[in-house]
Amino acid sequence: MVNIIQPSIFFQGVSLKGQNIIEKSTKIGDYTSYYLDSNAALAQKNELAYSVQCYFPVEAGQDGGLFWGITNISSGLVGNEFIFTKGHFHAKKQCAEYYWGLEGEGLLILMKEDRSFSVEKVIPNSLHYIRGDQAHRLVNTGSSVLRVGACWGSDAGYDYESIQKEGFSCRVFQYDGNISIEKV
Ligand code: PAN
Ligand code: ZN
Picture 1 (cartoon, rainbow, N blue to C red):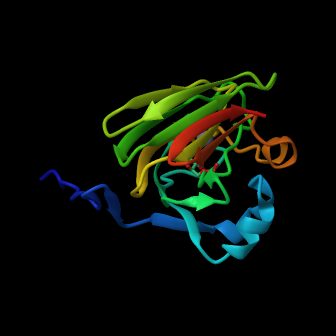
Picture 2 (cartoon, rainbow, N blue to C red; picture 1 turned 180 degrees about the vertical axis):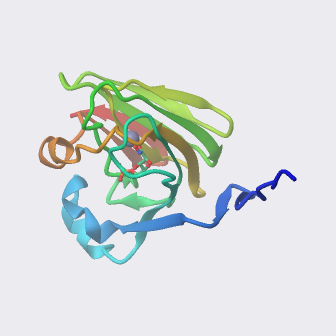
C-alpha cells in the first residue's frame, strides 16, 4: 500500500493556511526612520504596515531549499509617502527571487549596489524576477491592501543593514492625488 500524503497547506483566497505557516507583522513604529517624514511615522507607530505569511520547509541558510511567502501591505500614507516594505538585499548576491502580484496595485523598486534603480508596476498576475544583486522594496500605491507572492532560496539570507543606513535611491509620494516617483 502506498501511503498518500494529504496536503497540509492551502490557499484560502490569496491567503496561505495550514501547518507550519509563520506570520510576522511589522508596524509603522518598527521602522519609523525609513520614512522621509519620521515624525509622521512616529505619530502612526501603532498602525500595521505589512504582514508576511511564510513557509520555511528547511532551515534558513540551507543550500538549495526554497522559501515561500505572501506579503500584505497596508494602503495609506506616512506624510506624503506611500507605505512600503523595509526592503533588503540578499546576503548572497547570487540568489534571485520571484515576486508576483495577487491583489491590489503597487510598485516594486529594484536597486543595485551602485544605487541605480528601476521601478516595476505590480498588479494581479504580474510576475517579477528580482536579480540576486538587486535590493527590493514593495510600495502600495493603491487604495486597498497590496498582496504579493514571493519565492526565494533558503540560502539567500537578508542584508537589511545597508538599506537601514542608506535607504533606497527612490521614494514614492502622493501629491494632490497624483503618484510621484522621485530619485533621492
Ligand atoms: C520577502 C520580504 C517581505 C517583507 O518575503 O521579506 O516582502 O519585506 P522585508 O523583508 O523587506 O521587510 C522577500 O523578499 N524575501 O526574500
Ligand atoms: Zn528578498
